[in-house]
Amino acid sequence: MTETTEQKSATAVYVYGVVPADVEAESEARGVGDAEVKIIKHGDIGALVSPVRTDESLGTPEDLTAHAAILDGTATVAPVLPIRFGAVLTDEDAVVDELLAEHHDEFAEALETLEGKAQYVLRGRYEERAILNEILSENEQLAQLREAIRGKSEDATRNERIALGEQINNAIAAKRDADTRRAAELLDRLGLLISVREPTHEEDALYIACLGETAKQGDLEEAVDELAKDWEGRVNLRLLGPLAPYDFVVTKESG
Image (cartoon, rainbow, N blue to C red):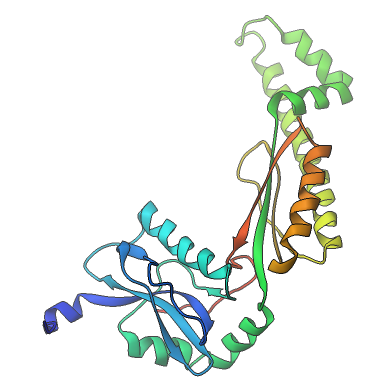
């Protein structure tokens, strides 16, 4: 059945990222809106795309998850340059002319540098009771202040409680800096490129993105396991990846 002009005008092309031209899309891969994903090729590169309705808004949690899943799934088998969520071009010709042709050499060079590499994210969260006990054991003044307000009403000790909370938060921030440095030094010794992210929770111990060779993932996992043993009961560590190199690639705006 042939599409009408109206149907065509209601459809555009959603772009996930750029890959080498020899990459093939997974037949079962489903993108934003549960659409089939394909690759539009030009020269040595190609764009991961899927059709998208222009009369439907983007931005649901499912859309964001689908966007990341396509990119992260690709990163396990091939280098990929992620494009910011929500990039939409009018049609396949625009994908070639406005994205692939215009930035062909730049993208091809970036993909070459990413060959065999992927992003990993190391996250750590303090055990609340353990880190609090550690801070109080190291600061007698804080420990005394905590004892002084124990059992007293919140109204009567409001200022003291505020002061205690601020000092504990400052102490956690100092420990976060020290623990982030230790983890970053560990990753650096493994030859990984590092990008420290801002904490997203007050009890974050560290939040580091790193770029490394997928063939050496085992070495990274072993190092993280050793660090986790050292911090057992103090910091909960999680290693995520391989992922698309979000923190290490900046693509030009499209659409």
